[in-house]
Structure formats: C-alpha cells, structure tokens
Length: 266
Ligand code: 2AM
Ligand code: CA
Ligand code: CA
Ligand code: CA
Image (cartoon, rainbow, N blue to C red; front, side, top):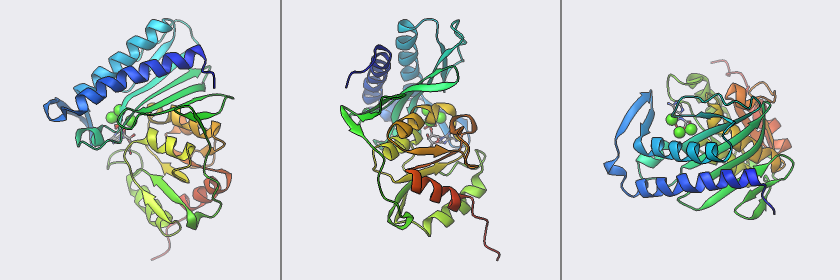
C-alpha cells in the first residue's frame, strides 16, 4: 500500500496530536475543562491537539482552508481545498479515562471528501482512506462486515444530548432498532464508530445531530471499505446534514427502514 504524500501529511498530523493526547490522558485529572454546550466539554487537551494538527497541515499546504471543532475557521486562498478536523472526538470518554477517543482529519476537494484519517492513540489503531484507493487499518486492507440479516447484527449508535439534534426521536429509533438486532453499542466517539463499521466490527451505525468534523473522515472510510452511508432520508449528504445511517448495502437499507419506522399507536 503506497500512501500519497497528502495522506502522509495527514497521518503525521494525527500521530503528533495523538502523542499529545496520550500524554494528557495520563494526567487527565489536572486538565482544565470548560462546558461549550449541553453535554459538550472542551479541555486543554482538545485545544492543544487542534493547534498541533492545524500547524502541521498548514505548514505542509499553506493555501488550504481549515475547519476544526475548537478554533476559528481559516478560509484559505486556494479556493478548492479544506481540512476538516476533530482534534479529539470522544472528549467525554477522554475525561473519564475511557480509552475510546480519536483524532479525525479529512480533506475536502471541491466539496468532495477525498482523504480521511481516524487515529485512536490509546489502541494505536490508525484508519486511513483515499478516494478510489480503499480503506486500511494500520497496514491492513479493511472491508465492511458481510452479514445480511439485521437480527445477526451489532449496531453502533449515538443518542444526541438533549438540545442537540433530534434527541426525542433518537430514543424512539433506539427502541425500534433494539427490537431488531443482536446488540446495540453506544461507544461515544462517532469517528471511531464509523471506523468500526469500515473494519467490520460494527455491522452498522446510525446517529443524527453530528457535525462535519465528527464524520467527514469516517464516511469515506466506510465507502472505501465497500459500505454505504446515507442521511435519514436516504440521500448521500451525511456530512452536510449531520445524519448518518451506515452499513453494507443490505444492512444500510434495512437500518434506514427501521430508523424511519413510525411510532406504533398506543
Ligand atoms: P466530541 O467528543 O468531539 O464532542 C457522540 O455521540 C459524538 O457526538 C461524539 O463524536 C462527540 O464528539 C459528539 N458530541 C457529544 N456530545 C455533543 C454535544 N453536546 N454537542 C456536539 N457534539 C457532541
Ligand atoms: Ca465537542
Ligand atoms: Ca466530535
Ligand atoms: Ca471534539
């Protein structure tokens, strides 16, 4: 597998931020934490990681734009390229000492995501994809799971905090999906959840109320691993709508139907 120069830049940035996160994870009780919104925390670790990623990416490609969760958007002079970055996806896990968090970096070209990296520094799992080039975990090619029957499936999800996305409807979706599948997992890092679909650990995933930085890299990982991703209406723009329904071609379709099932009459 030969990574392009651009993908190497992204991997280097993710690994650098990952090292900083690993250091802070070891001393998590000493970090300053503030609250951005309902259930949304940010720490010095998030800020430091974003600065490291931004400096590394902009050093390599000074004309590209930059959108990160924790800083001001940089427009860029190039007009066609933009980095989309979540420096720490899974902050709640991180602050609780749970090793399920990641650095997520995507590259957008003329509105299209063309490369993505998701890195979990606690497990040293590095997921990469380039458009047309397949998906990888470390150096191994990955594919979505092959199961075709929903009742055999382990499905990941996220329930947006009250005040984010459609919290109430998510609880109804959860009730419906739970009745149809082998197991539900709620791990708390959307980018890793999508990487788990790409590598076949999860058979599928759904969540709403997400931001581009949570999912831009992960959506490409899934598509390049042979999977399907849509918004809640079945359209292709998961990254723009913040809605994700994902799986292989059978499970994505089946999950979309269950997620949209109307409430049974009381
Ligand atoms: P974060 O850790 O970067 O904030 C879990 O459902 C996913 O949603 C995570 O990717 C998490 O990203 C994000 N998330 C959790 N709570 C959030 C909130 N209150 N507002 C916005 N995003 C949130
Ligand atoms: Ca956040
Ligand atoms: Ca996030
Ligand atoms: Ca984040």
